[in-house]
Length: 217
Image 1 (cartoon, rainbow, N blue to C red):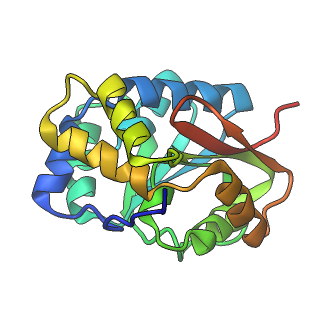
Image 2: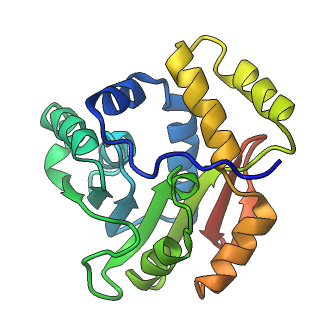
């Protein structure tokens, strides 16, 4: 199946509220579990933080972390700030508007750099990965997770039916579009190589997720 692009930024109020209302708990829990396995520590950058679910869950589970969440959607960040206001560890998180393809941080700024499910939104993600790698301290924790593209439309539909059977139609359509916009694992390897990333591997995490991560010891 050929890749079918979707919008790079989900910036309407409807998009932000619809995304926030979806049940991301299973995927978010798995993502955070992997970060813990990899040794997440110190100052953390969450690229494409959306409504802030992962950043706030991270500091709730590990209050010693300091997390900076960045996103290009103002409406997503407004919702993130609302969630931050009622989070007991919210003062450990800062949300900023930023373009993942050109981050305004010095080299080697973060001990951990992570991103969940924005790769498929970007037509050419090489600059995004290059920037994510640039701001990571040498030897730091790196985790970029995304969906991977199924072989055909029927397979994408089957995944939606399996994992989003109880979601609203908006959520089901968004999930399907995201699967069709995603890269394959082989494409992800090529993208990482083009971005100059070394010492990391691409792994398939589930029937729909893949990750570029620093290798565990």
